[in-house]
Image (cartoon, rainbow, N blue to C red; front, side, top):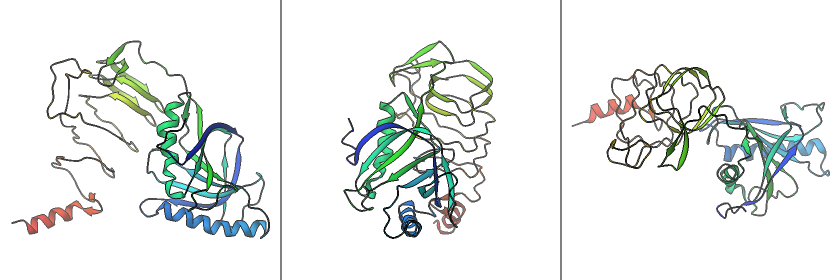
Length: 327
């Protein structure tokens, strides 16, 4: 059953596909320089002329593919490469200006969409918010996905256009436990693996997915978290020292909805709330990006701010303007 929140989604199923060889023209979508809603249709307009030249004026159009290619860190709104392509034999020649991309054999969650292109964000929202949570046997393969167009596609603006979007998936690996001890999180209603107060030393979690762990007062030393994913981790009162965070993405980090801290009761219960400030001290946050974040009452003290911009405006210019015009 597909939720009525996604009226354009008319079907979803898992299919196994063999490997594909695609050739076509590729576009680097680097926001905000490139607006995908404008650049991708323009790319296809040019591509369809070349495809028609290749097959002849009277031949039926072949299946066409739009290949999205991503690099870590993965997440909503990230940059990507887009290939507007057709499928060919492995040994087929590549016309000038086109490139070849190989798509591996894989299982796919195939989502069928009907409607104008203006509503296509439903596809990603449905897959990540509804299909994946309802199909716990699978996990997403994040580095690519593709759309496939056949005779059902009637143009970008037609409400009757229909095409398929292929999300690569794989069987979810069995979760490994770090400890047999558990603690119940009364606030979230979850049973967590209990590493409270533990010393975690000389461990590699590279590429691991960590979910449902209580790390209050734990000590992490010489631990490799490259490429790992953290979800529902209890990190209150954690002290992180000498960490390298290149490429790290913090998403949907929330503060409790309370005016002040309360520490009288057991952590993890409604009677325990910590709203103390999150502090960055003696840290290199150069080139960091804050998007759609609540930075209310943030205080910056004794920090280098060369090149720091707020909505494209240099903070040094704002400070100079304030100093020159304050009463």
